[in-house]
Length: 628
Image (cartoon, rainbow, N blue to C red; front, side):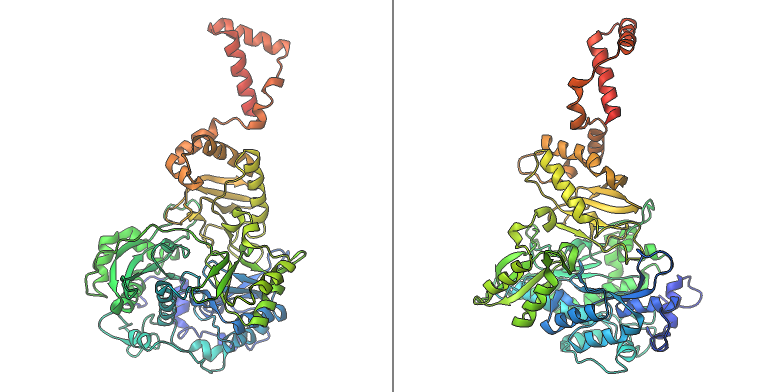
């Protein structure tokens, strides 16, 4: 696409074009004693892994602070980086570290005056925030377990790292701005460097000869771009929610043959705007391993050139797939990658695993999965996870793997220290996997208030109470053994992927949520909207009819999400509309009629020629329904 002044574009597109490859006014503004960045600079900051935020709990104009997000392909975190983040969050932040649902870390509450120092420390300890936000490729996900006896998992981690390097911004501005030009030492695979600069097959920005951004060009992407790599059967990465997803294909000797390629997934939408959609990725074909970087570049460049640069709500790759269809998309892809894709390789069914608890790595060592409610690593009374993790990583120098479910795996644990690690955790009040309610284990929430500027209501802070109330309701309805995937967000942008949940809550107003039903445990099916605006104080009243329906009409072994999908939203709504709450039914034997009411009903029986018994029962039913 020829990006000239005659092309209609959004305001953000102009900011990117004028930024001189993401410099803008950042070099001068980081040195100024002002409490915040300018509006345009705040947009460019996102490409450097930083959002400018306010504490919305404070009334009036609270001071701005910064949220930083790391770029950690496949969630692998070295001990030195984790200990650095632990120190930084205490020295400059809000004393917490947050695991994201894309296997990255976030620090909150960093003042503008300390931002450069924090980024420098992260980079000097084997980390980066480059490209963690903004209109570029985000953190590339892969299954988190550090299996050493499964080549497929090793391939997935390797290619997640390589694709992250391939699609990282290359202009050098990040190091110029934050490290005064000092370039970090990286160990990029030679084939990645070759693939990035290769002309002809695949693609580069042909509009700018010798561009410092050979893939992105001056405009970068129309919107964020998300990539995941996984292995057959493992959908811990929520494969179908990504713009581009790859599934590792090996032969009988565990030699890498290539990848199944999926495109066009995405979760963001806007309430009551039917032009915005959530969508699952489509499989478009199999690619031999020798050509995978060319295909990755081709998909990125197709979106770069054809994505909507005027309407940012319509700018993700999913809209090209929605508007064009798979056939046209694959035809246009031939302009960038001329070979026809082979058919998809048949895969086994995907399953859900959270990798909590102890597991063998396959090399004589084990890893331990720790559940972190909503990803927040912190200390509070009776539960000191932050202190425990710091002690474990510091004493034993163990790497961490972050999971797409906002949890942490402590890896490379030798048999002689496993008991000591478990003792450190239990002494600090951290529960082992078997002691955690499965509703909590399978839940996720976005941060929402008070830091996110897009949130319309709470998420992270209210989900623990919501789960407690749901569990209490299930117990009361004799469904105490049931669990399902619950996800909550404070707005419709879908950061915790609520549209894939068996039960999803999407913030739609202050204290109100849209309710989605019918996703799956293995994240292979979209949920559907059930209630448009549910006040949180109506949670039990709203969910009880559906749980009763599930209890009475489920098939043997049927999961809650599968039941909701089988019945359909219309049937669920019809059942709920005719449902009499159990507490109201219990009152039926205590209902008495006054003489005046009895006389009116008797007259109605005579005029309608219906038995008095039927008239009385219908009147009581109507009264109790209204009461309920």
